[in-house]
Picture (tube, rainbow, N blue to C red):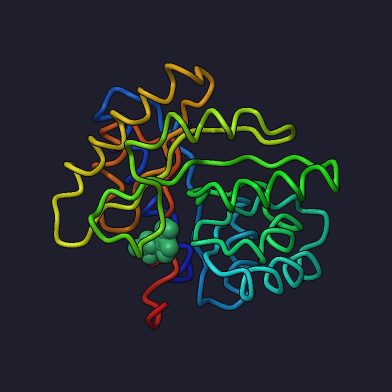
Length: 230
Ligand SMILES: *Cc1c(COP(=O)(O)O)cnc(C)c1O
């Protein structure tokens, strides 16, 4: 087995084990492999292992990669997730390959998505991203704004609100941040009962995320290996 295949299998096993330990099923947790900074051939190798859900955080990198992958592995029905901060002027491009945006975090972005949906009569799945830090430069919405923002998102035709996404802060216990995300997720479900999904957990903290109820984990380096700064 290649190193990539070994790491992929190990992460899958650990996801199943973490789910079982929490009294959940491994199949209730979807693995999204984050492939940023890695070449398309790495994604193709994961595709050959049967994987279909991939995530990227920069449109400039994601778009050519998604197109190249379609050429390398045609008719594979890949499921691309956009997980990074999304500039409004990249929305149209991101929506051309991504089925899900994990980083819906501000009214101006919602407005642009609504505009593109109206123009193209397509659909998009979105998570509201939470900013759990004091750093306003990080992506994500202030948790106290979520209900109000969700009301506007729910009114957009073609947009399906799946739930909330969060990245645990640096140098803090991820459990604390994920517990906040769970609490906000419950608040969101009071006005959007279908928006139950919880996109939390990365390479360093996915097991605790699963323990706390993650439905989608976004895992990069634990599978693809280390990357340069991005
Ligand atoms: C890079 C990235 C990930 C994956 O990070 P790893 O630590 O490599 O698992 C997950 N979510 C987002 C938003 C990212 O940018």
